[in-house]
Image 1: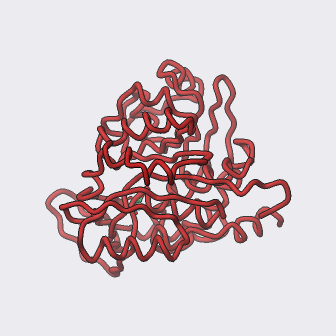
Image 2: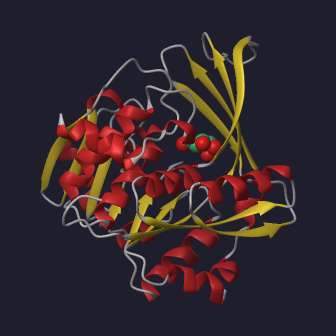
Length: 311
Ligand code: RIB
């Protein structure tokens, strides 16, 4: 912890599960089979990865999610414990979430996720007294869109009741109730996700001005839009600025780079950094993460981020 930093406490409610990573020369086209050169498994999920990023940045981290009564659920519990995360895993009668990830030789990826038990988490689960106790004193609640719509809405309602600001990583961008977006202190979409939220098509390339206007119309106060190798665009009402990407080496695997950014950004905000400085630090964390294979496994520790900031 550097001088003047608060310790900070963050809660993440989201998906934790198992991911199978396969490296391929090119992504399969519809109807095509491709051979993969490597296969490995990792505990993942956007919520899980973001909680790991928060914990590795040094803030007290609570993770709330649901898993099945199976070996993958046990792995989630064991990995969260190893990271020092206060994990509240609710057991459901459904398989633990599972993702199949293909990574291309240039580091690009595709992800298909079966939400399983994570999608069975309910508002009633969140309103349990032990869960509310775990949320007490949090600087931020970090959410993604891998929960059921009912659970996501309940998480927002609970945060509002407990006066915890919500940061939403709207990924995937599908079916997010518009009224929730207004409640966010900050959203952290990628460029594709922000276009979808703002009503642009996949082929549109809206200007910064057009994006700002659309977000304002939706009642979104602040956004940190990740734009891959270009960096991140910060939008705060009428103001915007670009945080350049950080690239300490060759890009190996971009899976989880957005999760690293969202988690690290939330952690640095919880430590008391202003948005721009927190985003600069998060960009360094995300830049380091893409130089290694996997998602959670490639998230750096705060000391590695600080090392690059000092040089
Ligand atoms: O953002 C990457 C994550 O999305 C992977 O860890 C995978 O599990 C999916 O949920």
